[in-house]
Length: 234
Image (cartoon, rainbow, N blue to C red; front, side, top):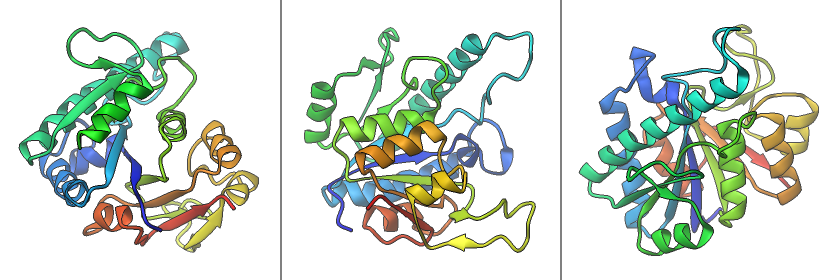
């Protein structure tokens, strides 16, 4: 699998490392080092980051779902600003795009603008979700990858692949080396949420799931070497 343009999703929780909240700078720097190897090799990289190191859904019934999702959108923007700056200190050019105006901190998304940044060799961060409630960052990266004609979606998680059950609960859980997106949907394996899974199925967007903590996991995945699970669409 030779990649020209890839979209990488970084788990907010994984970026927090052992702290479980906020950022672990060394974890982010290591991710940046690996991404730079691919950028230097000419691969165009788009990044979406979850917000789970700051906010996970509606934590109180007193908060309206729409407002809770808006807080989550802002959490992803904070994450992208931080990670983008670490990437810059590692020698990369970056830009952050959002689906809504965010002062002078980001640029408003358009496909033409994103393509312009990719052509300049920038790592492009897609922050703020879809701009609408009820859509997760799974849906965000799927939508953006499809719209931006990416070759694949890479999911760097705290877990090292797709399992038939939760390995934290079931020590005998089976890990898949390869599985179709149709099987993921049928077996309700929740690699990404159902909306994102169906978009991948309908638009034939492959995914790969691997551990953020694996040595050179991001660099290998961007070169098509998957040591986790490949989710196929054909």
